[in-house]
Length: 401
Image (tube, rainbow, N blue to C red):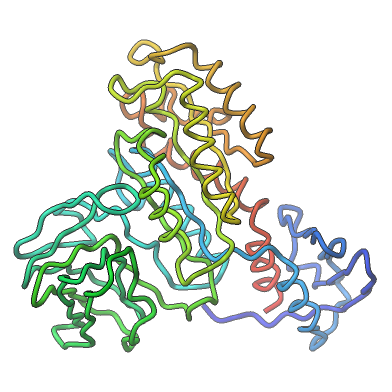
């Protein structure tokens, strides 16, 4: 898509408020682009049909960008709903949300594939001798033995991996259209590390292959990007079916969530803790209200104590004729979750408002179908747009460029 060059007139630049004026034809009532900056008031965009060409003040836009609370990563930590149970990848709310974020930012990136999807998915194919391990944020990794492969198609400049490094780890070779692009040694001091950013690959649609050589390697995620390091928001999904808050409260798990959720050593990141359904409805994983809240507090505090921002999440109820909370009442859990959000002074994404697991949006009385995921997507997007000024900045930039 060609960029439209639209200019604006700078009407005012004072300590409390700065104003950008765009041609009236480019803004409508649906555009929410009043941006508040903590340090020096607000910068507001208004329309003016008399706006003249070539009046773009890049200094003001740069100032706006610098003043915003810029996140390096947006992370979703979740269960089967965030994993996309029973719906196609393109219909999953996380897929829709991340695609919208990339669209607003004007980049051609994908989410970091941390879930290591099961064999047979439409976008990842595995070959050779491989198995699943238990490392990483969701305790699901892919162990490749020599000559085992991961294959996918696309157009990516950066192809890298998150992995569990050990002194005995082997190497990986990365091919595009059967031509070797680079070889990466994954051995070294033990830890969860990434190869990103390694040597770039020439752009263009193609078939990519990651091949294990020498000795086994344990892959925790595949990174596929086109943006330059540090120039955009990275999006990470860490979600696995049947998980509850109790699965994420242990130090090694929390450390890996924080590490992978801070790609490129980004200091400020956003973590959405989209858990709770299994705490109420799963027969094996359900926990009393007090334990559920304490687990959520443990996860949130671990991240907040390290300078990260957190959003909590409240799920919709399940079909009461099929599922009911194992301990207490649905409303009791909700009240406790909101109490925790007030204690921590963090927002809540409350999908019970749109109720995306009722009536025609159910799949099985608990999981949303494709229509339900669209409702989830809108609930998440509404909160994230308010939480991430970076996206509002991107919207302004797109309107005037």
